[in-house]
Amino acid sequence: MSCALLLLLTSSALAMGTGTAVEIQRPRGVPQSKRQFYEENKPFTCLDGSSTIPFDRVNDDYCDCRDGSDEPGTAACPNGRFHCTNAGFRPTFIPSSRINDGICDCCDTTDEYNSGATCQNTCREMGRKERESLQIMAEITKEGFLLKQQLIHEAKRGQEDKQGKLTELKGSKKGLEEKVEALRTVKETVEDPEKEAKERHLKAWEEQKELIRMGKDKTRMAEAFLELDDDADGYVSVAELQSHLELDPDSDGSLTETETQGLLGGEGKVDTSTFETVWSGIKDKYLSEGLLDPPAPVETPQEEESRDFVSDHDSDHYPEDYAGEEEDDEEDDDHEEEEEEKVPPTVQTPEKSEDDELSMPPYDTETQSLIDVAQKARDDFDEAERALREVDDQMKNLEKEIGFDFGPSAEFAYLYSQCYELSTSEYIYRLCPFNRVSQKPKFGGSETNLGLWGQWAGPEENLYSVMKYDHGQGCWQGPNRSTTVKLTCGKETVVTSTSEPSRCEYLMEFTTPAVCQEPASLDEVLHGHTEL
Image (tube, rainbow, N blue to C red; front, top):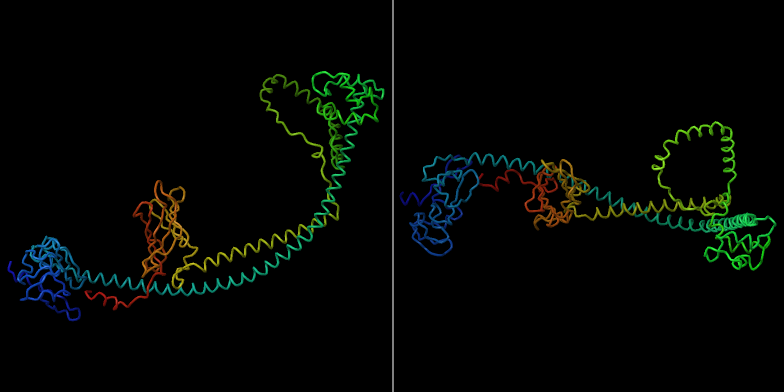
């Protein structure tokens, strides 16, 4: 191959307006931006300044410069780079090792100038597709930006509405606070007479109960006297008392005459008038041994009437019922042993005290009226307090939302309180902007928290292009889960993809009009790509 063939390259750049080819003479593999460093008939200085060589040693298939700059069009230098002009498409660099390797890397085929490979120049077709793609992107950006303007307008109006609502709630709160304090005063005022009336009623009831207890105690004492007075002579004597070993003071199993006299207050016998003193000493033991049946509970008139009705009703059918019972007894005799085995264990119920058998009578009309008035005051106060708490909660939520960083013009405000899902073959991913990210198995299972809202995390020049969610559910023997959400311009608001680049660290792609920037015209876009 001649030195001239290797040295110079006819670079055919298609003039888009005229369709004519412009030939630019420069060493093969050199971009137009570095043409001035390669001047024919002048010594060539390596671009790293390491050495200077005669110009005819450029592209001579021998590497003279350490940076490989003397062999831009051959594969001689391992660190060399070959420039593909790719007229009509996008220029690019490829490693010089790919020159003449039989594979077409440059769309203009210039990398295979001496390999014999059959290559087709596809730059025009690729440029056409690139222009179409740029046009589609320009249209999406344009529509997205228009939607963004609407979002900004709605956010501004929404912010004004929230501020107005907050001002209104502040006024309501002040009125409710005054109402609560006024009702508190009313409540405390009416509760004092209510408390006094209820205490009077309770005191009267305690006194009444004491009288009832005393009456019952006298009845028990009289019954005990009659039971202990064996000879019914009107006296309880030492001899009569000695037969009741259950009254033994020291519980040694015997009741001596001395112990008995002690119980009788030193007397040989006592009558009903002096038995009261004796009764106070033996009452507890006497009653604990069940020597007397418990007194019947005090019944209200309604209970007594109901009992009498049931008694009369049962007496009318007694013979028939009794006969039936006899028949049942005969039938059950054969199964007596089985029944005994099936009888459930006896449940011990606590004994009721006398106070349990007595119920306090209803309040009198005057006391009940005071209670009703106080209760209404309490209800009114509680209702006002609830209303005040609700207003406080609404104000806190509004202040939180108003204080959120929704972007420079609040364009992201519409995402607040919304959630977006992406369904894959295994999981359903859920993104709730400014709240949380989660993952749930598609066919059953619990939800996993992939992170809570953290902050905007884009680069300084584009801060609102990335969201960060952290402090999610912990991984097994690993860190807490976290999610990075990358935002791209789009006409729709949708989660487009999810992945897990690192263990427990998730990446989510999310399109939204809120990140669309003001678009340039298609001509301006193409002007930025002069190769097209």
